[in-house]
Amino acid sequence: MSSDKLRIVLMGTGPFAVPSFEAIRAAGHDIPVVITRPMPPVKSRGGPPPAPVRDWATEHGLPIEAPESINDSEAVERLNEFAADLMVVCDYGQILRPPALASSKWGGINLHGSLLPAYRGAAPVQRALLSGDEETGVSVIHMTPRLDGGPILATRRTPISSTETAGELEERLSQIGVDATLEAITLLQRELINHDGEQPLPALGSVQDASKVSKAARLSKAEAEIDWSKSSRHIDCLVRGMQPWPVAFTFAETKPGKPPIRLAIRKVTPVVDAAVGPNQIGCLLATETKGEMAIGCGDGRVIVERLQPAGKNEMDAAEFIRGHRLEAGFRFGKN
Image 1 (cartoon, rainbow, N blue to C red):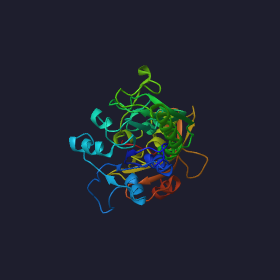
Image 2: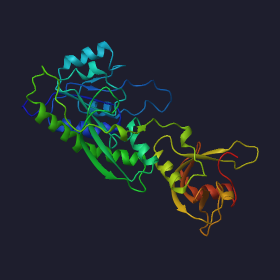
Image 3: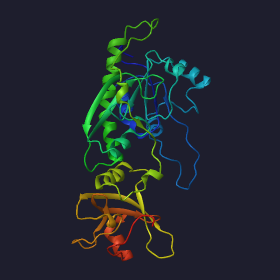
Image 4: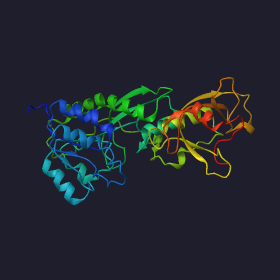
């Protein structure tokens, strides 16, 4: 192996990691192992959940290991056996403690889906959309035990499209992250290739501004319920930010005495309209467009274009309106 090729342990689970891992493989670096999360037990007839990194590693014949905890003594001992120059971690799901980080010559780098120090945590892409941000990006940090808190080695910025869902944005950021990851690896090679290992690693990258830290907690199903008193933009951001999971929803009590139908809301268009009054919030509005599903909200209306009733296929909202013969004034949400 030539001197510009490194021995790199890859550590990831979800789809965000795959493009950067593939770029590292294609660059000819030595990958002694791909570490991923254990497969969870299968709870439905649909089969096991997706495992993108595992599938990618299998496709390329790379060794796979999946310890329950990357920080237990046995797992750390195994990491030391690989004698890696570097660990590249992305979308893995566990925080590495100091012994695990010390198992490779240069520690680890992590690709994160935000412009750190904004949105540290598990759901950075979704939280940027839910906050209505107009710009986001990726950051590659030199890892420390603090969650997403290490110095920044590389960043890439990108505007957020007004129609982009979290799933679409995450896929795009995963591609943007390839160049940033390779840049960070090159920086470490240039600065640390002659490091003797006897002294602590020199400080590289930019220290994060602690005053600008924000958190990106995991999404919950409960926060995906639409509050029709919010602004049209807020509801649009919720619908886009909650896809592909857990998906924004509301309820429709279409038959007296029957349980309300849960409606997953897939696509909306926000419209600011001062003519919509407080008594119309959450109500189906009369419109000039036949069959249009316009629902009153805090600053106007939200035109629902696509939805999915529980247990049914996704459909045009107009089809749902026709099928249930809903009239203007029908109220959505739990009454």
